[in-house]
Image (cartoon, rainbow over all chains, first blue to last red; front, side):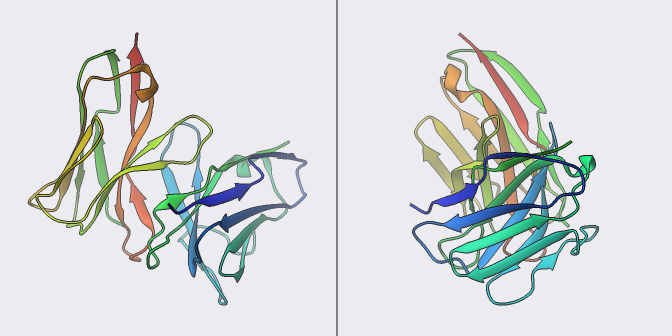
Length: 115
Length: 111
């Protein structure tokens, strides 16, 4: 079945620095990937849709200059949290779809802690 | 986007008991999905439903797509300790391909 790999699984960074998170589709090509954020004891909230070869589409309230998304190939999307602050600490999860563009398979998530 | 109302918020049961949780939507869905999330992990797809009235099983799990297309339920029979986790319902967002999630049902199973 479809496998989505996410790296790193956890990262701690200093306030003001940038962090890059990778999302890879291991055994299929994904023209579309999705990035979600999950705060403790809450549900997953869609941040943005990553489109291969074009600009990402951001949900309302998500700062595109702060959360940079690059989808340079059919198997890799990256999310860069720029100038991170403690309030950016969260669980970031990507998803992709093997069939069509439906993002039903999720990565294992990245726990970001900004100190 | 569409609102998904999931209940109950949490359940605390004994091993061997059956569990039922449900999800309702403010609008019609063409797809209902049920996921399980373990602590510190991404959600794992349990069952996908694509047709109104559809009843699908996956081992001890059974899910149904409501005929009104605005609701779905998930049943777990003969629960075991490894069923512990958070269960989410999900459906397509207004943008089509991403997902809207319910708020989750936290399941605790005591031996």
